[in-house]
Image (cartoon, rainbow over all chains, first blue to last red; front, side, top):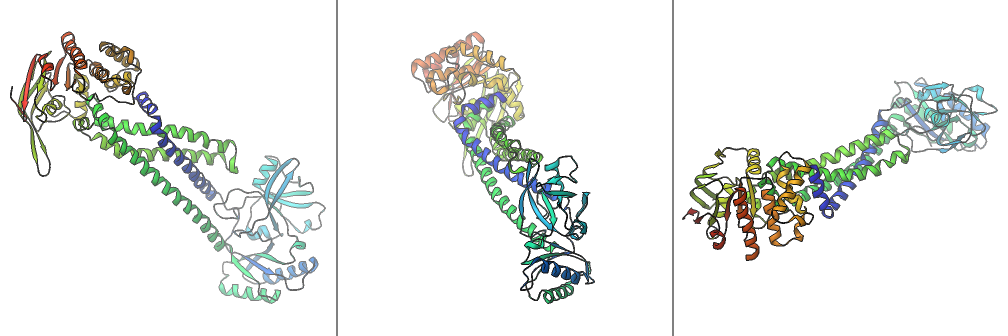
Length: 388
Length: 221
């Protein structure tokens, strides 16, 4: 029977071409949607790699007239002392503007010998790891001993370590020709829960390029409340002699970041949903039309020995064969994504998305063919044969 | 071979009730070639459809080859038609998207047979109707007479004991009609196939063993 279905479909290739194209486009869209969904789901399931609860970020402008690095360094030390002295503060660290869940990113290139990679660049002081609870995987974090080191110490994350060094130990190795790796930390999902793996390099805060102001990450105790935030604001504005202070809570920034990303995903899913509904209606319509157009054929098949169930199976089978042809073409294109490492996603992300998209298209086709198939099965042969 | 007992067929709509067949009782013997005649709308095709189990009577009983068919499930009816009955229609009912050979193979698809067996049987059936040279043609490439011969090949490919022909020469000119009639007569004579044929053509009917006339759903002869 399968051979018969292929013959029938092949002999009607012109009529079936558009249907195959429609299924193919739906498959490609669903493959893209599922890739996105699987990618986000896999990322969501990865550990955050740092602690954002009870961590606040504070941005401020330096007091007017501060124009050299020595005065900035001195001012920062006093500011840190001031904040740290507050009873609700556990730890304070200076950073650059690309704090977790901010919209700022700083990127650049990094190399180890001939291996090159793109990476996010972070400025951190000695307390940065403690404030964010970043897990140390190898080596050490920065300390006062690194001050004035001949080779600039850097800490890299696991993703970058894997890309530059593979399974080798990176500690003590040179990157960028003059920087020395002193530690490896876990990957941080600092752009939101759904962020993918990104390379990261941490270097000690350089005050020479932060004459404008600074960013502090403050780990507060659970007892820190709005009153404390008010007192903190007051203390800081007194110290910097201006009111250009912005205090944000990482947990709220995280929620906002996730919501913005999810809004985008939901919009994509809605658009894809409309497309699927359109395809489903189109498919349903074509199959329905086919039944009406093929009533005489259905009647004949019933007359020569096909039961109602056999007719229903045949129509669903035809739709499945068409779907299979579309999916073979679609899979050929989809498989190029992992093979050519497009978008730098993991192979299993594409493979899971591929399996889901294939299952989805088959289910869609079965659902769309089921009712017309049942209607065809219910046609009385005598009536169908009468309608030529 | 075919035994009809007080067959009635009523078509009902919300407002109208039409009696298409009124208490028809008929016996068709094994190997008989019977023709049914009557004016348009008298119930000839309805009677043929009921004999062929394509339609169910409103009342009455049908026995084919001593088997009581009332109460058969849809699947049983389909299997019964497949094995016992071949159909020939006025408008051929060929599937234009399938080649001649594939059209003839159609009844064999619904019984257990291999592709090789199907091809052999279909080729043999086409040879019987003189169409061995048209196996790879599509129905649209054939004349009316050739189409009807393909339909006959399809009807006999499963070696049924009964052939029901609904105006098989109705769409053909007299020469073509005679050719088709010859094939049917030959089938009846050589294979012993029981044939029931609905026709409007008195000349064709005269060539059969027996004639049954219907008028307004009732048997008048």
